[in-house]
Structure formats: C-alpha cells, structure tokens
Amino acid sequence: MKLIEIDLTKGNKSNHPDIKKEIQYLAKINKTWFAGFFSKQWYGWNFDGWYGVGIQFDTPGTNKSRWKQLFEIVEE
View 1 (tube, rainbow, N blue to C red):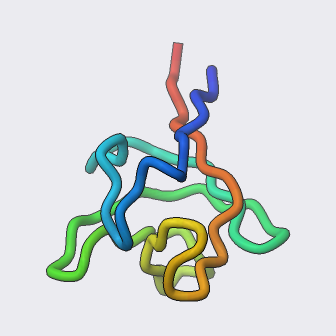
View 2: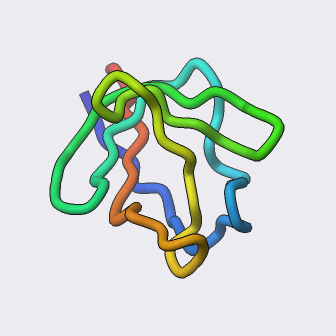
View 3: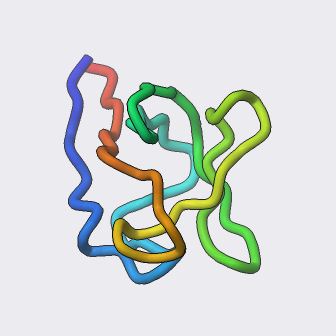
C-alpha cells in the first residue's frame, strides 16, 4: 500500500481537481483520521468516511473547513 498526498490548496470551495470517485482516501479531519470514498453532489465533493454520515469537502480557509490532510490510498 502507498499513500499519495493530495494538495488541499488546489481546491476551490467544495471542489478539487485531484479528488476522484471510486478511489479510497485517508483523511485527517480536525485531529482524527478517517478512511472512505468521495461522491459528487450538487454542492461538490462529499466524503462518506466521517463517522458514517459523510462530510462536505471544503478547501482549507473556506466555510470553516476542518480538513487538515488527504491521501489517496493506492494498493500495490
């Protein structure tokens, strides 16, 4: 397994050019790590791994974002 860090600053509000569907991610939201997948919604990306209910992706600095780090999980 390999982790590829996603540069969160490339995002625009709730969208990000490097986030894809059907790819598993490891996300640090506040101080806790979560694994899950993103789905595209009308408002942007939604991450399903946050306490089983999902959380909207927000680029750091927008909408009181709690996102600290994001890694794509690549199975080798």
